[in-house]
Length: 113
Length: 114
Image 1 (cartoon, each protein chain N blue to C red):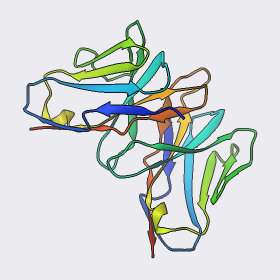
Image 2 (spheres, helix red, strand yellow):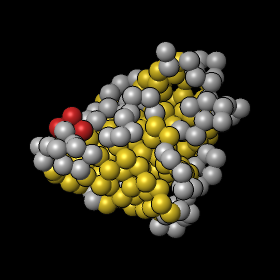
Image 3 (cartoon, rainbow over the protein chains, first blue to last red):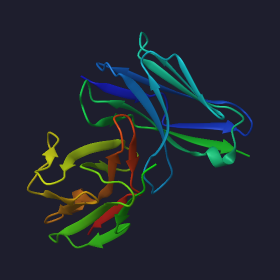
Image 4 (tube, rainbow over the protein chains, first blue to last red):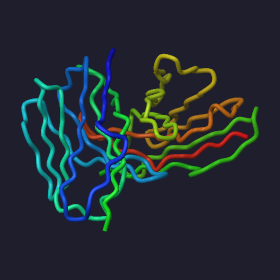
């Protein structure tokens, strides 16, 4: 069966450190993978997209890697700040030509001042 | 990016009543919108794809007669939860695509059925 698993439900780190979140998937062959941020009681906000032929993508303090052999994506936040505290979701396309996204369960990140 | 609004942001209703949730695209004409549901500490699950001017496409296990979707214009899709029950209490989120890879989400509607 298809699964999207994010390594931990919750992650606490000290301010200034790098947070690393993991997304593993099985029985998908996504052309790309996306990461979203979701704050409590709010809808997800798009952060980054990485394509299957891209190894790494960066945006300011964010870095995403995509290993289609391992079927894994890593999401890094460097120099983390308390304002980065949120739930982070990875998402995959449903398949070739599919219109919908499938989401992981999310990792709730808390950056401790 | 596209701006998506939802109304109401939260609603409390009695069991057996129907609740309508609106999803508006404020700056983009969307032929397709999506409705998701999210239970506490769970991921978003796609319920249905709303198509302007035609019938919605429902995901497996989602009752189309219970969750009525109307996409009457390029900027408005509505989800009506008919005869709501406590198990329908959830966070309902709509989204739209502005391109093949870009999806924008609304702020969500919290439904509590007593």
